[in-house]
Every structure is written in C-alpha cells, then in structure tokens.
Image 1 (cartoon, rainbow, N blue to C red):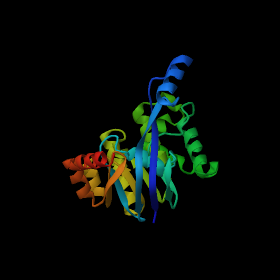
Image 2 (image 1 turned 90 degrees about the horizontal axis):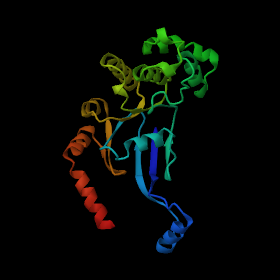
Image 3 (image 1 turned 135 degrees about the vertical axis):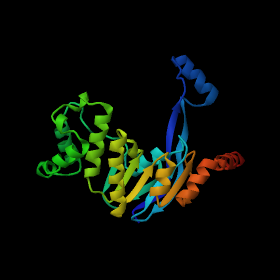
Image 4 (image 1 turned 90 degrees about the vertical axis):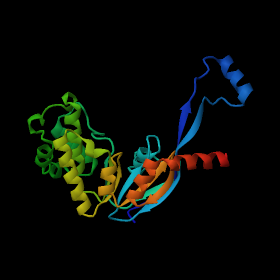
Length: 256
C-alpha cells in the first residue's frame, strides 16, 4: 500500500466572544463550570481507507466536507487529533503553491531554497534551474525578487518547482487551475505524465470531468466523514444527487 489512513480525526476550535473582565469570567464559571471560551468540532471524524500504489484517488465533497484538511494531513502539514496517516515513499505536495518561498528572494534563490528542503545539494539544484524556469516561462524574471510577481507568475513558479521533484506520491489541490488556459494545459500534460508513470496521486477537485477522466478511485466526504469509497463515476453521481447529505444528517440526529 502507498497510503494507510486509520481512524483519522481532526478537531478544530470555534471561539466565542471572550469575557472582558475577571468578574465576567467568574460569572461564566459559576454558570457553566468552565472558563472555556470555545467549542470544538471535527473537521474530520474517524476517517479510514487505504490507497494501493499507482492509484489516482479523488477526494470529492462540498465545501467544508474535509477534503483539504485530509490532504493537509496526508501532506503532514496538519497532525491528526486522533488516528494516523502513513505514506510509504517520497511525497510532493501541490497544496499551497509557493509555500516555503521567501518573497525577498529571487526565483533562482527560491529554487535553491526549495531544493535544500528536499535535501538536494546546491550542485544538484543548479542542474534543475533551467528546466524549472523554462517550464514556468520565467527566465526574464529569474533574478527579480518574487514579491514583485503577479499571482499568476507566483503560481507558475510554484507549480514548476513542485513538479520538478520526482515523487512516489503526489498530493494535489485544484492544481490544474493554475495560471491562464494555455498554462493549465501544460499542467494537465504533466499530471497525465505522472499518471502514466504509475505514481500514486491524491487530488482534490470540484471539476467532475477531471475526476471521471483521471481518477481510478474516489472518496466522497461529508461533514468530515467518509461516506463512500469506490468508483469515481458513482462518487460524482452521489455528489450531484446530494441525497447522501440528508441520510447523514438523519443518522447524526438519531445518534445524538
């Protein structure tokens, strides 16, 4: 297996208005028995699944269903409150393009910085600079601090740096929407090359066409729970039908 997720839960805090004085704090304690000014909710609740090597798994669900949170757990950006997520092999995450870039540095300097984060020597990184800049179409701005880049330029450089790593597992969050239409086509071709090479890919997308054409398996999430794992076409149909949301809501009220 490439990925093993076991009973993963991620709890977030939802803060309420805090008392502004010691007196208000004391009154709150006498009324509720606690000084807590927040409640908790599960962005993910006991999610479990396995992903075989070479699988393209799409995470499907409405906004707030837990897709991006799960992707961040897999990318080790977030640590689960409970449970575990194990990934076997090298990982490249296209979750937040340019995360880890220093805006004061130039494109070339950031390529070296990113290389060091992936344990590349400066000599090894130097061999990749031309290819990264050419793909990003950024040669003209190679020595410009990236704080002066437009959002599109920033995204192109971030994508080019990320895919330059040759990972066993690729984590993708709406990455095919990077840049203009022509650059999106370039991104799509690189994505298809990863699929053809047998990489394990986990992707988040709201584009049903992308899911049905590229995914080999899909996980449907609702309110932090995994409600379906299987055929991508079936997952998309359930998502469009939206009946699973009603069933889940009834199940939750019956157990509460």
